[in-house]
Length: 442
Ligand SMILES: [Mn+2]
Image (tube, rainbow, N blue to C red):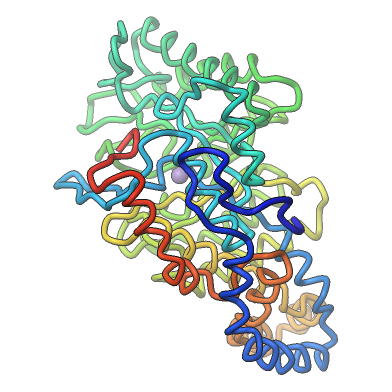
C-alpha cells in the first residue's frame, strides 16, 4: 500500500494507458468535500458504537483480491461471445489492465494466472511489469478441462480421474509444470479445479474415479515446494451433468485431508446448488483450518459468474461475517487466497471488476462492524431477535464513505467507476489495441 512511486501509467511500456496518479487526485478533488461530510457523519456514528474506525480502514486497505488473467476480456456463453473493444491480447496487456484497476481501487494487488493460457515468455520482464503496477502473483491455476495443443492424450473422459494411466500421467505432469511456472514468478499456491465427471449414469465407477483422483492429487502434492499450498476447488455440476468427481466441499475437504497439511479446500461462490448455506460451509472449513482460498462471484441459478454482490449481497455479508470471525479467532486461518472468478459477457470487464471489488470491500466493512461480543452473548441468551438485530444493524449501515476513505488515503479513486469513465480509459485502450482483439483463453 501507500503512495505510488511514479506516475501510474508512465510510458514505460507501450501497453500501458497514459495517465497519472495526478489524474486520480484531480478527479478526487471534485468529490472530496462531499466525501469529508459523509465520512464525518459515519465516523461519528461508528465512534458512538465504540468501533475502531482507523483499524477498520487499515483492514480494508490490507484486503487485496487477485484478478484472474482470464477476466480482463469479454467472456461468453456456449451460445456466443460478444467482443468488447480494447481487450488485452497478451499477458503484458492483462497485467496493465489489472494495474489500472488496482490504481483506481487500491484493492486488486494480485494476478492469478491460468496455465496454459498465460504462460510468460519472458519471466523477468513480466515480473518487472507486475512490480511496476504493485501487483503480486497469487495462485496459479491448472487446466485439464481442455485438451492442450498437440497433446498425446485427451481429457474428453476426465483427467486426474481418468481410467487411463497415460491420461492421468499427462494431467499430473501438467500440474507439476504449473507449479514450476508459478515458482518462477513468486507464486506460492496452485488451484486445481477438475471438470472430471460423467454425463450419464453408469458411465463411470464413482469409487474408482475418486481413488484415481486421490492418487493423482497426492502425486501433485508431492511436487509442491514446502512453502506452497494446494487448493482444491469443487463444483456440483457442469461441464458434466450427471456427476462431478469433486462435487462438494466434503469431497474437497476429504481430498485435502488425505493430501496433507498444505492442501486446502477452495470455495467458489457459484459452485453450489441453489440455496446452499455457503456461510456455514465457510465456517466449517475455517474451524478445521482447511479453507485455503475463495472465489468471488454472484449467481441466481448456477455458476452464473455475475458481478459480486449483484444478486445476493446479504449472503455475501453473512459469508464475510464467518470469514472475519474465522480469521480473528484463529491465526492459522490467515493468508487466504482471494480471487474474483467472474465472467463479463455484456459489461466492460474493467468496470465489472471494479464493481465486484467495491462489493467485496463493502461486505467486508459491514462484517467488521458486527458487534461479535454482543452477538455471542445474545446467542448464549437464546435471544434470537437480538441476534438478527445485531447482524442487520451492521448490514444496513451505509459503509460506502468508509470504503471510499480507504481507497482515497491509499491513492485510489473516491469513485473509481466515475474516474475510469472521466479519464476515458476504455477509449484509450481501444485506440491502442483496436476493436477486435480477443484475450487468450476466451
Ligand atoms: Mn472458481
